[in-house]
Length: 282
Image (cartoon, rainbow, N blue to C red):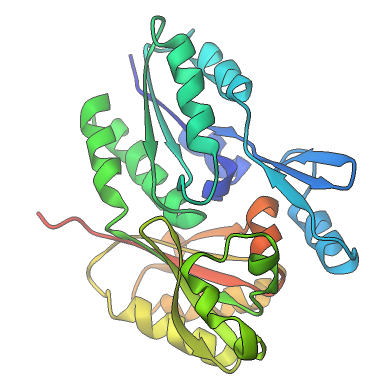
């Protein structure tokens, strides 16, 4: 039977992408006061960012429950006996623990392998897409899972933050905390390192941020397996970046996504990210 692939919505795999690639998504939750929404299902990204900017209190987020994963595994077990689950970094969310608890519940019925991507957003998403392609090419569950475990070293998420206040308020600042304080007025470029947010550099404006992101991607020319661009409230900046990157990678192959509401709780408005999945050394 074909290996089925599951991921969480922090991968920024959209519903359309998931349907096209045969991926099952497990949503996280975002809460405004007493209102709870499933990420990307019960609230659109546009509605979320409007509320994020206009409401005085920062929303909170919650990982999927073990039961959420159990329901997905049970359904897929009717179609296959092998499931690969790729989840957000365990240093950023408890999603991995929920996925593992559900796996233990169903381990007698289906062979389920859960792998921590050690990343988030399209840093995780491009690893998922690579796993889908490996399955389509006939790779076994064990081989694909091993590839995913090693892939975080090839997955490079670089994100422009207009402000770090949302990341700090949400407690996901990680090693980027050194960029707080007096530098809050300066724009920050962060990455994911060892499964958590880490600083790269500072820039003065979105224009300088676009220049930095373009230059960084260009440095990987001819070594790119996958490329993705995503944004929060600024699609025009994402369009500009895609146009620029078309000089080093086919534009039609650049994956586009809106950063999910749960991630947006911490990235805030006017964020922009590019992810490079570096080609494996043969």
